[in-house]
Image (cartoon, rainbow, N blue to C red):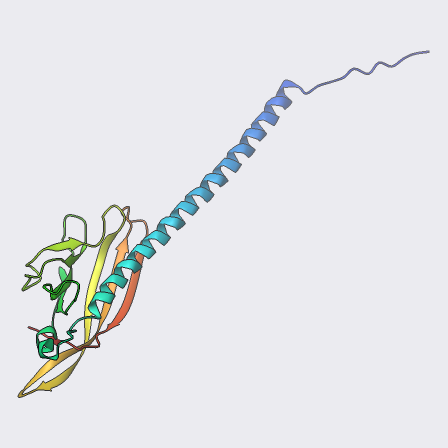
Length: 206
């Protein structure tokens, strides 16, 4: 009677190396996919934040512009119904007046953007009441260059003509605001437009 002996055979060294290599490749693929999803999620979040910051800035500007020409005293309205608009290749600016009961001594308001601003492309808001032009007074940036850079800020008036005494004046009925911004790395862009109705219809000044 002959007995057949069966010897146990394990994996060879080459098989173990191949299995290890395949495992490493699979692990690398999973890691790469995870990192890709992480970067995509981060980019999406940054794009959303840029859009929200740009929209918040546009809402602030629009809300302030809607007050142009307002004063509760009818005898003072003629002094409030004044607006100055500058649109050039290097600068966009709007100055206007309205009465704010919280700051009764500050009747002049404004926003400006200078494309050649070396400090980082800001939309600035007028914070003083002594500005007779867009180059006077004290201005405060609305955006931080760490989060958002403004690449375009343009104000286009929609107007009509109104007879006042013996003269014909240009009345501003609404303003089209065009605001474009990027993140600080220039990777994402937000471009918003809004038409702002001016109920008090200020007169355009030279």
